[in-house]
Length: 149
Image (cartoon, rainbow, N blue to C red):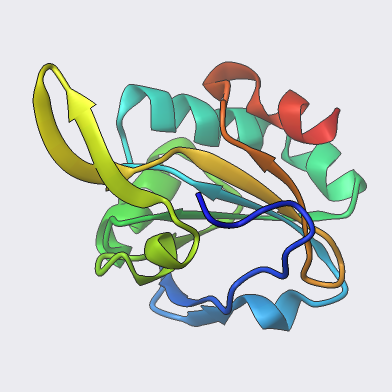
């Protein structure tokens, strides 16, 4: 991963589940929890999203805006949000443009096979658009606790 704590967050523009373009620079003045995950509906990704949902009020109370990003399309995001009643936007990055800017689209090995995939990672971004923390060892069932610590 090429980004480090203290770096400005890269420019990010991506469509949310409703097809609305979201620009991270529009959130200047707010803290952001930006979590990258491989796929809507997989067990680990679902556990992560639901843990953030279950602790959403605590995250809001600390001033955080929560955004998720995966390669899934807008329609799949809509289904995921509806099924699990997620209160935050999910951004679609099917061409891996945002993932590549964050250094999170990379070769992975699973069961002896090499494929390209998402490195599950969360960035905590301060009010000035500076990376405050990078969580690379995401604990899906207690992720909000990792963010709020």
